[in-house]
Length: 124
Image (cartoon, rainbow, N blue to C red; front, side, top):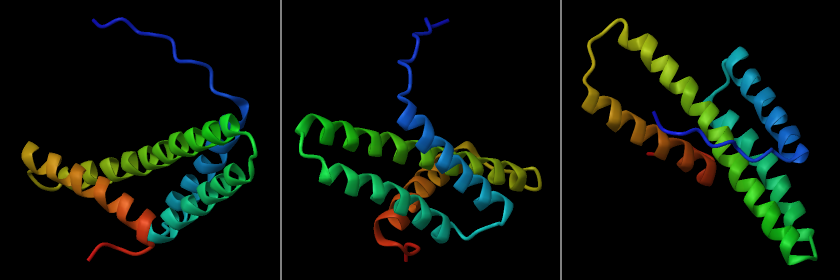
């Protein structure tokens, strides 16, 4: 068993943003929103953080803000990926799947989230 290292405490600002992003995620699930709509909402929140970061005059604060934005992006993406995995598991109960397909699907959905986030539309 590998040793477990304590995680550094999350800054209260990051906790607030994670809570906001979690609420957006719950609305996505509850209302069965389209992936594009959900990911655009996430991007809007993160863009607001980015605008705040640009307005910072102190370089150290700006770098900290950019790091926060990156962590929140990964947090949002992981919530979305967990839902995708759960949906795929439900689908697999009805069919037989191979591990190789699982890896390819995981890679595709990772790409899919990033593409929608960066372009605002589904990949073609």
